[in-house]
Length: 167
Image 1 (cartoon, rainbow, N blue to C red):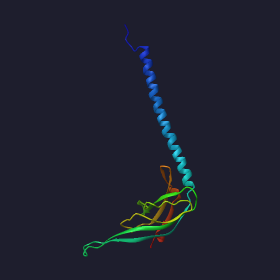
Image 2: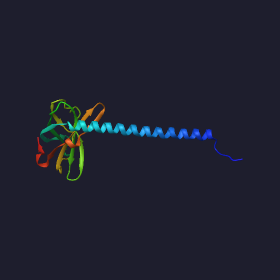
Image 3: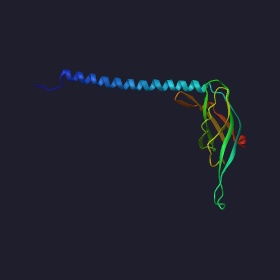
Image 4: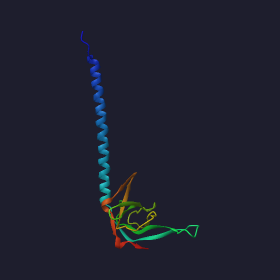
């Protein structure tokens, strides 16, 4: 007598495998479609960004010490004016990309730096310890749509070393 899988069990196993594969394909395709939609939205919003930067400078912030024998700790902060030249999208903060001649470090702007339609504002960065060696600063806008925040690298404004002055 030959032993093997009965036709009913093999049919049930085959249907189970088809269901698992179909679930994986559905899950994967949903992920692809969602990412494609987000990328398209990001491209659309970022292509509409139009802003200008003026009066870019840094200021020295001294944090005093209690002991007069110890030198004060000195920190810096960048300041600039930004103006949104369009109605939409509204700009949601900025990233300052600091180029030290090969090494790049990001620095965020303070909260509350949203620029609405045709809005202009003075923007300040978070403090940083050292500005020596900075060759250029790239001011990169962020836009917000719903819960999504997009960084618009291509629309960044570049400030060269010669343009970085003390306030």
